Image (cartoon, rainbow, N blue to C red; front, side):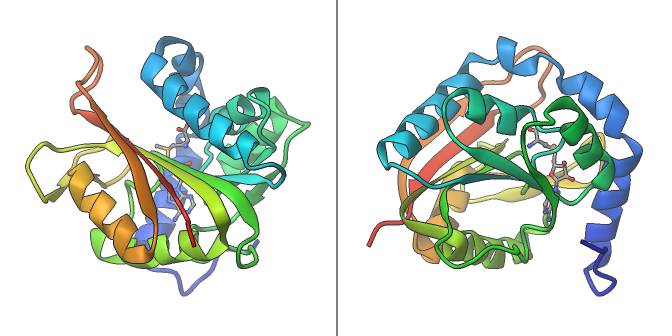
Length: 217
Ligand SMILES: C[S@@+](CC[C@H](N)C(=O)[O-])C[C@H]1O[C@@H](n2cnc3c(N)ncnc32)[C@H](O)[C@@H]1O
């Protein structure tokens, strides 16, 4: 995919920032899942639900260097990755040559209506200006099949009904109160099944949250 020149400036900034930091970011996340039991637990619940639904592929949207895509495949879920940043995608393809990684934006996915059995948005919606999040959730809803599953992970705030910018190391990012993001998921049509908030680990500044949802008739 050729970079869309009419995309908002923040999209170019995010792509550029992750391109520049791709190797460092890859080193930073190396082995992280091994020390993140809550992450593994939520991915495991998601994978179990997708597998129970039968066939169909899963998109890891904002896949970065591909660690979550690979983990999902190891859990028996046929996942592929989508990301804005070509440099990260190149690393993903190098690390996991058996998997598929495509360039694209979650704001306009090159996927058919109802084409996914599941989707994961793992710390990748965090850079999106909050006013554009409802449209992205509509887009995620569009590409998900009926009975399909969605899993989101993100930095949280415990201030109710809030979204606030924070100084993320790569580029500007936003942390959400889980209830507020869950409300937007419901507005887009999703059914929210679970919301987990955990306290920060010693190397984290904020609470972390996970939302598990699905597209029910
Ligand atoms: C914090 S990293 C997380 C990467 C990966 N999910 C992980 O946990 O290792 C955020 C990722 O989201 C991607 N991203 C940001 N905005 C995006 C968008 N609009 N569409 C697709 N990917 C996006 C970035 O390029 C980056 O790879």
